[in-house]
Every structure is written in structure tokens, then in C-alpha cells.
View (cartoon, rainbow, N blue to C red):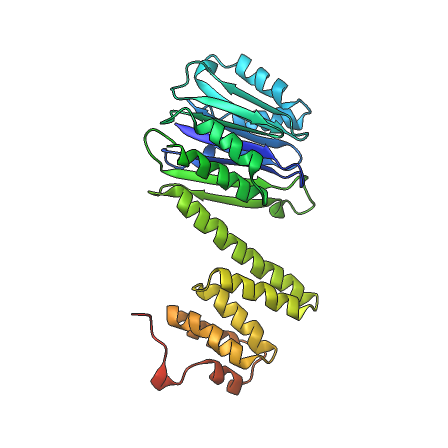
Length: 306
């Protein structure tokens, strides 16, 4: 009923897992933890394989030993499909002989792909080939694997939910920053298309975060480049346009700011109200003249499109 991948990026050491299935909130079946590894469980899914698999690997067991221990204690293991990758990139996979066909798996250096209840028995080979040959960051490669599976027909029932999860190689002093990507689509007619849209949107927002850090460090041109790239990637985003425009206005680039903020003002009247509140409450160092210059005159107020 599902196809998935677990992987450790050989260059960065990041861990990731990705899944798609015709099942609501199918993203619940994968886990990843910095410094430990990643797990995916499916078929007649036993959810304890995720937390317990990570626990065993955290305690120092290689993925193969962790998986063997769990399947040995599982009376229904013949109905399970489970994969793990540990902190050294060692992979282990179990496809029980009573999984619903078509089912199978393939492993490679630092990754495992697995699928069951597929329309065709070519799915896992296509997934393996995709990850082996793909370039880019781990999230991109995981999504390409899911798209390759869907290209071979995917789940015999169709599609409903998907998830991509990527965590850092090692835990940091800021655990809230250790998850790099966690995007999920719980119910959608084309979950992979939606997941692709969300990943591209996240990259644009990541650009805004980078811009803020650059601006605080005094690299204004670098900040503007990041913001411009974010808006170029998401040209209709009022959020990106609004904050980029404020940065431009705050550093004397009034004409660019006015053109940019118009994107937000066209989208929703609340952006104009927010701008006035920010100025009135002292969050913007902007004169009333500069504020008025950013806004269209009342007679030419920008309304919603259409």
C-alpha cells in the first residue's frame, strides 16, 4: 500500500525518509533522528518499528541487528515491510513474504527503497535508479525517488498522502533547528505535485531566513540577493513581497519597494493595514512621507485581482 525510501546523504551525513501511499496521513510511517538514522515501516504497518528502531540504533546497534531483533519479536513480521539506515550509512530492509503483491525492495550505498501493493513490479527498480543517479540536496533526491515510483504506476489504488523528512547529520545545541525539511500532504488528489510545490515554497522562505541573517551581519547586498531570489521563485507571494519591500524601503530603495509591495497590496487589503500598524507602533523607522509613498493614493487604491 506504500512506497518509501530511507537514506543517509554521503556528502552531508543528513538522514532522510520519504513516503507516498493511498492512505490518509501516510507520512506517519517514517522517522529520522540526527546522529541516529531513519526508519520507514509499511505494508501491514507496525508503528512501533519507528521509535523502537531508532532506540536500538541510538543504543549502538547496527541497522541490521536492530531490524532483526524487532522482526524476531513480531509474530506478524511476514506481513511487514520495514527499512532502516544507521549513523554509518548501513542499511537493512525486511519485506515479509506475505506482503500484498506487487512488492519488493532494493538497497544501495546508504539507502533502501521498498514498495508493496504496487501496480507494477518495476517500481522499486525505478526508485533505486533515481536515487543512484540523482543530484541535489537530500530533500530533492528523495522527492525525485517518489516521482520515479509514481512514474511506474505507483500504488495500485492511486495516491492520497506523502511526506519528506530530512534531519541533520548530528544533533546540535538547538534541537529545534535539527529538522531541515518536514513537509507532508495528508490528503490530496496529487500529493507529489503538492509536495513539490511545498518544497519549492519552503526554499523561498529559507531564502528569507538567510536574508535576515545576512542583514543582521551587515551584508545588505547579500540580503537583497536572497530576497530577490525568493521573490523570483515565488513571484505571487504577498508575504515574500511585503517583507522584501520593507527591507528595500528601509535602505532608501523607494522605487523598488513601491513596485514590490504592490504585489502584497493587490492580494489582500490586510497588508496595507499591517503596514500602517507597524509604522504606528514603532516597528518601522519610516517617515509618514515615506509610508505614504509606499501606498497608492486613496483614489487609486489597489484592490483584489479580478
